[in-house]
Length: 364
Ligand SMILES: Nc1ncnc2c1ncn2[C@@H]1O[C@H](COP(=O)(O)OP(=O)(O)O)[C@@H](O)[C@H]1O
Ligand SMILES: [Mg+2]
Image (cartoon, rainbow, N blue to C red):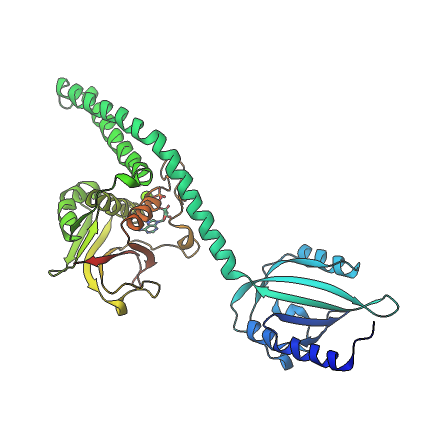
C-alpha cells in the first residue's frame, strides 16, 4: 500500500523528534541515517556518524563470535535483538539494547537494516541491586536458622575450655593447646555473631547515643585484636551529634573493619578512627538528610583494588585464600549500618589505604 506523501513527511518528522534512537544502514552496514536521539545517546553528531560503520561504537568488550552471530542473523533476513556494550564518543561505555530489522526492496532483496536502540545501563544496575538485596534476605533467613544454636554450642565449648585451662599447668603442652582451642573458639564465635546480626534484625534495640561512646568501649578490645605493630589513632569530635543506633552491632561492624585492616596491612601499619558532624554539603550526593553523624575508618594498607570495590559488600565475597576469609565481614557491616538507617561507603584514600565511612542521621 502506498503511503500518502504528507504521511511520509510526518513520519520523517516523527523519527527526527522521537526520543527513541533510530539508525539506518545499507546492506553493508554503512550508516545512512541517525536521528537526534542517537546523537544524544552516543555523543556523535549525525555528520560524524553517517558514512561510518556501526563499529564506530565498538567497546572492544564483545567477542568476534557475537558480531558474527548478529550479522548472520540479519543477513539471513531475520530480526536480531539483544544487548551489547558500546562506547560513546567520550569513551564511557553503556549497555545498548538493540533491535535490528532487515528492510527489503520490491524484489525482496535486503537493502537496508533499520535498528532501534536503548541505553539500559541504569535498568541493569537496578536489577542487580534487587538481586543483591534478595540474596541478602535469603542469606539472613538461612543464617537465622543455624547461627543461634551454633553460638550456644560455642558458648559451652568456650566455658568448658576455660575450666579445663584452670586444671592445666601454665606452660605445659596441654595448656598451650587449650589456649589455641580457646582462641579459635572465640574467633568462631565472632564469626557466627556476624551471621546473627544479619538474621536477627528485629531484635536490634537502638538507643540514642553518640558514636564516640561505643568507640571508647571498643578501645581495649581493638588493641588486643590488632597486636602491638598496628597503631590506632583517634580523632573523635567533641560535639558530635547523637544518633539512634544499636551499640553492640555498631561495635561488631567496627571490629570487622579492624580485622580487615589488620589483614590488609599484614599486621603492620596504622588505623585512623575519626568522628565528625556533616551537613548536606559534606556528604555524598544521594544522601538527602540534613545532618549526619559520621565515622571514618581508614588504614595505611595497600587500598582496595578497583575491580574489588563494586563487590566488596557482597555476602561471601572474599579475595582471601580458602580458610582465611569468609566474605561475611563487610556484608555484615553493610547490614548493620543500613539496619540503623545509616549509609556506608568504601573508597581509597589519596595517600593510599582504604577508608570506610558510615553516615548516621543525626538525632535530636
Ligand atoms: N581495609 C581493606 N583494605 C583492602 N582491602 C580490603 C579491606 N577491607 C576489605 N577488603 C577487601 O574486601 C574483601 C571482603 O572483605 P570481608 O567481607 O570482610 O571478607 P573477608 O575479610 O572474609 O575476605 C576482602 O577479601 C578484601 O579483598
Ligand atoms: Mg573480613
